[in-house]
Picture 1 (cartoon, rainbow, N blue to C red):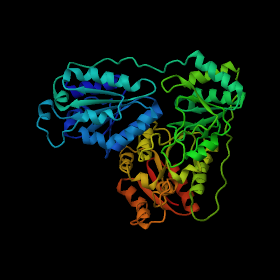
Picture 2 (tube, one colour):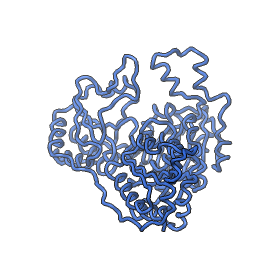
Picture 3 (cartoon, one colour):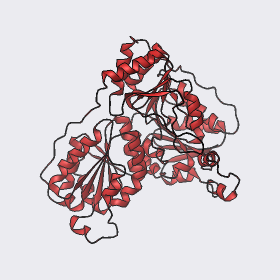
Picture 4 (cartoon, rainbow, N blue to C red):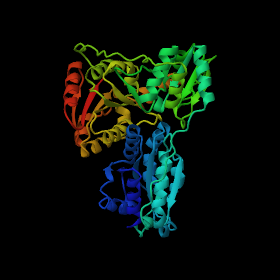
Length: 513
């Protein structure tokens, strides 16, 4: 076998069996080797940001890495924004980045670049293969690095000649370092803080699902502590029958007010909260005066086990505060607005759906509506780089083909990666995309006011206006092979949601709000 085949076989033997790809000339031997290794599923993406975002969504739902295949430095650069999001989400991804053959690099061809320098910006581990006989070993190391707790970005630069030259074979799967245990002292400090009262637990990662979330609920029931998640937690189990978790507000002043009265903020898998941006005369740290952050579990530590230990220290065995099942009434006929939109989604959300949320201003203030909907997983924009809602949904649908995926998507950020619709159609993915068509970068209109800049200028306003010309999401979706309808009333939108959820395969609803 050649180096490319040894790479793919090593990835498969290390349980990396999906590759989201946008290949070029330097990756042709990798592409050809897919026929020799059918256990690797290649998923073609029409833009590298879709490939990297899909790998993020796949990892969030499976806990294991997918691979991406990217073309040289410029191709990797096209995928960096969603690798930034994945790095902030702390998920495992293995990037395979093609590069020129070693003998060709000295000629400074048009696509020559410092691939390593680009990759370092978002990678926890970086390897380079210039000889075919080292490819398999480096691939195994990349998977080991990516899969180690809490999840990392590993990037492997594959020279074209290393891919086409004869290789020695397949490397064995390497052991993966799981989460580290939390110290007894950290558990004792958290128990003492909870006994003192006025405590809140800020949760992320494994603490927001499964046994970790259940243990957090038992602690809340026994101590009265508040359960809070980061504003944009990568994955959260929500809905009826699930432990109720409050969401930290996005803006600095509301966030500080939200935490007011908290004496100790116990951190589980996350850091003390900070504002997304610096604003004039507003603090960057969101911990209110008189509140002390206390670390129970760092991101690389076993936060779920730590919560279980704390619950056991209180003898807490009863269930936590659970969301009751309560669906909104059918809305009155009339124009569609973001609140009504979310209530209709809540009425019809299927059991165990996956919601990928990049609704930005359209959905944020109505987030709580889904608390009492059917149980579901909720995926958010972890790193703040817009354009991951559609790709993350794509990866989640590949990971969980038996679950309906619903995307709550702002129209402006959808334009960054609308090519994901084509991949949804090609792969027959069961995704319903709801576009909040407010025809503006609404979040930036709000930011203009909050930073204290002038809000009256017509030229500035034009930089946020998406209405001239108006984006036609029905035609855009149809052009990508996705069935689509437009709805601008509550009745039309509800009919569209019911129809889309009843069907298999990708559908898009342009909701004019």
